[in-house]
Length: 211
Length: 211
DNA sequence: ACCTGAACACCGTTCAAGT
DNA sequence: ACCTGAACACCGTTCAAGT
Image (cartoon, rainbow over all chains, first blue to last red; front, side, top):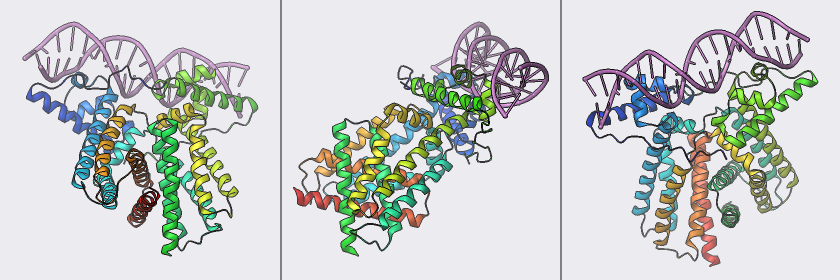
C-alpha cells in the first residue's frame, strides 16, 4: 500500500523552554506564509528555516521530516474546525432538525470561506498537483451532459434547469467522493447511497410542487 | 498564488514512430504500477525510467517534468470518467428524473469502486499527504457531536439516528467541499447552499412520514 | 526521430560540536 | 534543553553524444 503508517508524523520534541515555543511558532508561521505565497512546491526545509530565523537542524528537532510540518498544520486546522462544529452542535441542542441542518451547513461553509487564501493553501498543500484545468474540463463536460439529460426528462419541466443541474451535480459528486474516501463497509456505503437517492427525489418532488 | 500556470504540464512530444508509442505506454504503465505499489513518495524519475526500461533522458523527451507525468495520468482518468458519464446521460434521454439521478449516482460510484487500488493511488497521488488518521479523528468528533444533536431534536425522533446522521454528514460535507473547490460566484454558491438546505429538509420530511 | 547516461544544482536529513 | 551548519546521499533535470 501507499501508506507509510510506520513512520511517525508527530512532532519529535515538545517544547519545554520559552524560547523553544517561540521557535516552533516561528516555524509554523514561516510554513504557512510560504505555503500561501508560493505553494507546496516551493516549500523547502531550507526556506522554512531561513524565514523562521533558525537553522535546519533546529527544525529537525521538532519535526522528524518535512511532511510532518505540513501534517501538523493540517492537524491544527482540522482541530479548530472540529471545535467550531462541536460548538454549533451544542448551541442547537433541542432545536428543530431543519435549524440544525441549516447551522451545520452555515458553520462549515463559513469556516472554509473566512480566510480563503489559507484554506486554499492548505487544500493545495494536501492536493499538491495543480490540476484545476483538468477539473474544469471535466466539470464542463459533465455539466453539459447532465443538463441536456435533465432537459429531456419525461416527467418534469424545470423553470431553472441550470440551478437544479448545478445543485444535483455538486451534491451527488461531492457526496460520492466523500463517501468513497470514508472507506466504510459495503453495507454502510450502500445505505448512504440509497439515502442519497431518496434525498434527491425528495428535493425534486419539492421543487416540482413549488413551481 | 500557488498556481504555476505559466509552466506547461502537457506532454512535450507526441510520438510519431511506433517505438515512441511503446515507450510512452511503458512509462505510463511503470508510473501507475509504482504509484499503486509504493505511493507518490517513492515515485522518482529514476525509478520510473528503470521500471519502464528506458533512460531518464527519454522520459524527459515526453514529459517536461515529473509532475506532468502524474498530471497526464489524472488527465486520462478524468477523460475516461467523463466518457462514461456522457454515455449514461445519453442512455437516460427522456427517462424520469428519478431514473436519471439514480443512474448518475450509480455510474459515478461504480467508476470509483471498480478498480479501487488504482482510484486510491490516483487520489493519493493528488493528495500527497498521508493524513487519513487526521481525517478519521475529525470524522469521529463530528459524528459524535452531530449525532447527539440530532437525538435532541424537538420535532423529530429517528428510528435509525446513525443512518440519518451519516447520510447528512456525508452529503453536507461532501457537497460543501465540492462547492468550495468549484470557485463559483457568491451568487451561485449561495444558491447551491440554499438548494442543499431545501434538499436536506425534503429528505427529513420524507423519512419522517415513512416512519 | 528517438535514445543514452554522466554531470550539475539543489534538497532532505544527520550529527558532531557548541551554548 | 536547545541550537548550529557543514557534510552526505539522493533526486530532478539537462545536454552532448549517439543510432
